[in-house]
Amino acid sequence: MNIILLGPPGAGKGTQARILEESFSMKQLSTGDMLRASKKSGTELGKKVAQVMEKGDLVTDDIVIGLIAEELELRTKIKGFIFDGFPRTLAQADALSDLLVQKGKTLSVVIEMKVDDEALIRRVVGRFNCKECGEVYHKDNNPPKQSNICDNCNSENSFFHRADDNEESFKNRLMAYYRDTSPLIGYYHAKGTLVSTDGLMDIETTHGNICQILGV
Ligand code: AMP
Image (cartoon, rainbow, N blue to C red; front, side, top):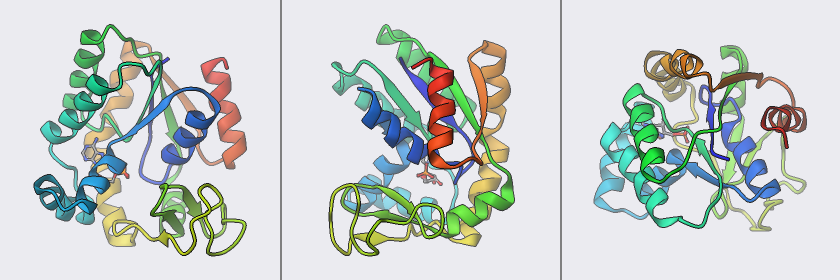
């Protein structure tokens, strides 16, 4: 089963992808995480994308398509992928479709996570991550059990606030979503693969709704 989680920044795609990955033997492919990893490693690619990401603009299609192509090439044993934050443009959607055909895979469903803009900004501004394992927390909705220890990997003092999780970058990211990514809703609807779900519910309820869509 290969699925796409589609939605604006802060819709909860990453959180849901991680839960799905843990619950079923699937692999989350987050282009945002891959780009952050290359930024951290200080590679040429990392330097190139760092400023673009901090401003909240989209990284070029060739870069992100290359990252996904590489993962699909390497991870031949994986039975199901969760595409999180990819595709974000029509060109990326076409490229993914070609890549899946080349690998003899099909796209099972595209799950659109709907959340209104006011809720998104509250979520993004209160969000923080564990730098060791990437676990996502929110100061009000999903705090760690102990304030400085990651529930997932037990790392101490590993929490950080993403550079682009601030109001100004968020506005750009939301703009990029409406301009470049939201046309994918019509694209996948026309292909008959789109199902929408309410992303405003709490984490467990949303997970339950996604499982229902997936029939698992
Ligand atoms: P995310 O972690 O998915 O919110 O992505 C963080 C940032 O990485 C985005 O605001 C973009 O700058 C960049 N990015 C992630 N995925 C893509 C993509 N598929 N296409 C273009 N840029 C991306």
